Amino acid sequence: MKVLTVAGVRLRMLLTALIALILTVLPLPMWLDVLRPAFLVLTVLYWSINLPRAGGIGLGFACGLLLDVFQGPVLGEHALALSIVAYIAVREHQRIRSKPAFQQSLLVLAALVVYEFVAFSIDGWTGHPVTSPLRWLHALTGAIVWPPVAALLSYSSEGRLT
Amino acid sequence: MAAFGTAAGRPLQGRGGSPGFRFTLYALFSVVIMYLDQRAHYLEHVRYVLQAAVYPLQVAVNSPPTAWRWFRESVQTREQLRAENARLRNEQRNLELLAMRYDALARENGELRGLRDALPPVAERWLPAEIINIQQSTLRHRLLIDRGATNGVFKGQAVLDDRGLIGQTTHVGPWSAEVILITDPEHAVPVRVERTGLRTIAVGGGDASSLALPYLPQNADIRVGDLLLTSGLGGVFPEGYPVAKVTEVHRDAVQPLAQVRAAALSHIDGDTEVMLVWFREGHPAAPAPAVGSSGDLPRGNAALQPLAAPHRAPAAPPPAQPITQPAAPRSTTATTPRATPKPASAAAPAPAPAAEAPAAEAPPPQAASPDAPPPSPSDSPPRAMGNP
Image (tube, one colour):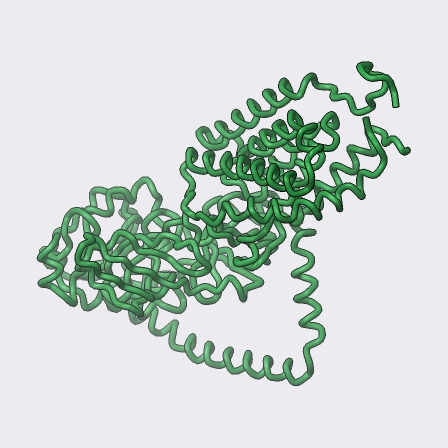
């Protein structure tokens, strides 16, 4: 059984997060954009659930801040939302990990809804338009693609960790 | 596997304390950042640095579409290239023919207005910029372009393409700048109907290329097909650039306002390049500073007044032979002189002659009501007067 070093894990986390960020900001036609799952949130969730001590909250914050530079109406909006989601995942990681795939997807859906809700509220407080109901669709598609994404990510973190 | 409960066997033990503590720290930090960014705008420099940091990533993100475009261009056949060449040649000839009379018209216009010599064009300098990234979701319509502060780009600069207005820059990094499109729901552009001179505000509609005109009363004189030009108010866009064409007018008897939608003339989907524009300081058609333009609205539409004598900056010498001015109420005290979007014979290269048409044949300004958005003056006097 291979045990990863801290540096190795950090590197993997950063690389996968970078790929997820690219997938999140990749220009897509509008109808596809509506369906685009929040890959960055899924990645942060994955690392927070499976390696709760590896610093998922910090990863969430950093990725969120980068995402804000790309497309946030205010700096710090996605950073806060991702920190919250990562914190919930770290706290509940044992409960989430032990569930079968379908129930895991449902829990991920709940986490994504929390994420969207935080972003939605901050949008509202800072005076940006929050009118489109389509934004909640991201949460649904995110939950649907969770099993394959988690399987893909587990390739990158093979090796058992305490 | 090491024993439980000891730090030795946990290579990934968090170093910054318990998750709860770290979460609190990060959350507080985010809230502070948000506050500073939103309320106080202290973070312009931080944004500048961050934008520089993510620039390589943004270029990388855009590389697949760029590669695809390059691939498609490189496999074009000879016939296609020849056809395109012929089309471009044709277009160029037409433009040259149009431009041939432009100088003469500009001078003639200036003479008619009593200016001693025609004004120079309002646009001083152009800079093409390539689109690096397009974000078009229902809530955000943004572009990223490959010009930034090192090219002299500033915040709030007008961006055009060859058909019309695209938007303005919002965040400027060293080598890149973010552009908010006029179709973004957060964007509003002051416009004027080309046919009537009616001024209003066009807000982004949220879908790919539409704008909404939410502040027009029921009886406003606006029709499908009307061209909307920038009105020059608001301090960002100069007067007279084409913005959109009205596509839909609904007059619901129950609602106090008409529901009007327009389609943007610029075509972001097809563009790979946009134009950044620098405007001549002090030009009458240049964007008026936003502070001064607040006093502009109550005066009604300046373009509707009989333009006998040119209105100039105080420093300039008076015209050679001042034409007697009809007793029109002209309250120029409220604003700085260059806030009046007055003659601008050479306002915009393309729409200049058409843009000035309503001003020339407009009636005296009694129709312009002192408050509220100025009602339509010319075509439907009874309706316009009936409901101020």
